[in-house]
Image 1: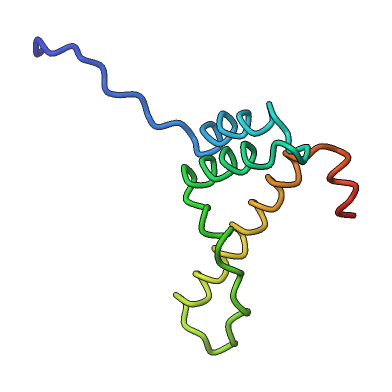
Image 2: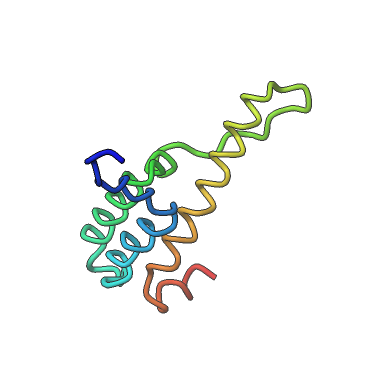
Length: 103
């Protein structure tokens, strides 16, 4: 037996744990209208941490053609999925009154 009794480092948290903590920042102060700048700052910080901030500045491209490369299809799928998640986060962190305006 060696004299080294150090435990290995703990495994990284599953992906959803940090998202939940960051989303709680947005949930504490929902967008009501007058607090738009604070809400947007928190939204961007949350999205930046999860590498999804780009969807605020870039529209989802047109779907690739059937003969598109695997890389092009994967890039489209990622952007589409990220944009869907971001839109859900944005709606979930709006006041009920603002959500109803969008329906």
